[in-house]
Image (cartoon, rainbow, N blue to C red; front, side, top):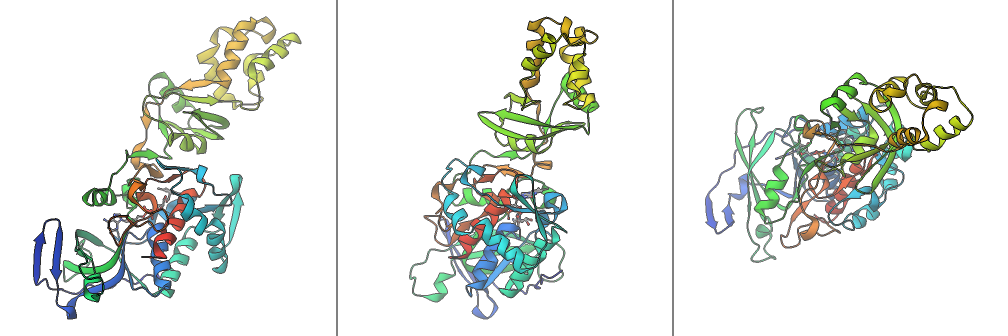
Length: 445
Ligand SMILES: Cc1cc2nc3c(=O)[nH]c(=O)nc-3n(C[C@H](O)[C@H](O)[C@H](O)COP(=O)(O)OP(=O)(O)OC[C@H]3O[C@@H](n4cnc5c(N)ncnc54)[C@H](O)[C@@H]3O)c2cc1C
């Protein structure tokens, strides 16, 4: 791998005085590890912050808890990383403050990232809904970011667990030694020999630890806990972009249909997406489901229009007016997977399974048609953080500068990426938020 893992050396604590919440610390200068900027988390947002700050001549250290940077980047987009979207709008993001993302997104745009990708000669393609994917592999994007880190002289330390973060108020801003406001006590998590505890001080501390999704890829609640320690609010957290589970008869039905997919229009809480759904042995997945899951709350109904471009009731009545002898199942199988139609027949018109359309009462045809255009169902739940692509909610943006991502009343502390209460739609928007918010912080951290 391209990243360099620096071995830590022992540092000595000489004085540690607790003053209310703030701590005054002193470590002999010769043994102190000092950086202008320390970034916690070597994911998309952390790497972008580090690159940007590094190019400004800041000394930058990234501390990554796991054994390597950018695990989610590697796994993203089915191995092809959907790194951005040609059209990125604030409407593609969920947040308690829908305006918060605007500044960062306009300062570092999808075009900016595409230019970076092109400078590294990475082959990419545009897919459905303007989504940009690598043509070869997600590792192209990670390698690009790690190369940029190397050019910008960024140091990355993996296996680094931050044990404690101390903040000291800057009494005299002119005094250089005083500007190292944050002291981090880090433990290597068993993969390095020698010293178990290191001390790092920095002027700016950037929290890029992501959300709770997929713990095996680094998902952690660290950023939320830290935000609470600094008196920031964390909004309700939920798994987002996540498959639904179904129970009871519906659960049995989707199990039988496992692997079948179809294009639908899906709605919940006045939000609608036209995309594919996939039946799974646990419930429902596919892009349409992932999108709507970010708007769903437990117990709520989702509406699935199985034939969004047709008024099915009207079509049935038209067939009837032509004295059509066709069965409902045969007619619908022209537009929907046959196995799905058979399951729907068992549920909605088993009485008419052998009756031609011309013989079925108008009222029944209208009811069946309406069911197909408005299939209302209540998911039992979601698959949770184990498979969710993102965490909905996060550190409230209320006290964060939308220009710099810095905490307004806490100089030098920044939050970027998914840890913030900004959640993108499926389609490259979450990475774009990571690039844009990382850039915003990197330009001033
Ligand atoms: C399977 C999957 C596929 C996805 N595909 C796409 C896609 O194609 N397009 C898209 O736009 N989005 C995609 N996403 C979402 C996208 O990956 C995330 O939104 C994005 O990675 C968030 O970036 P981040 O840097 O904020 O957090 P992360 O990428 O989660 O990075 C956080 C980093 O912090 C580290 N960390 C955590 N706690 C600590 C700690 N205490 N100390 C030090 N380090 C710590 C973690 O190990 C991790 O490396 C996908 C997500 C998943 C799970």
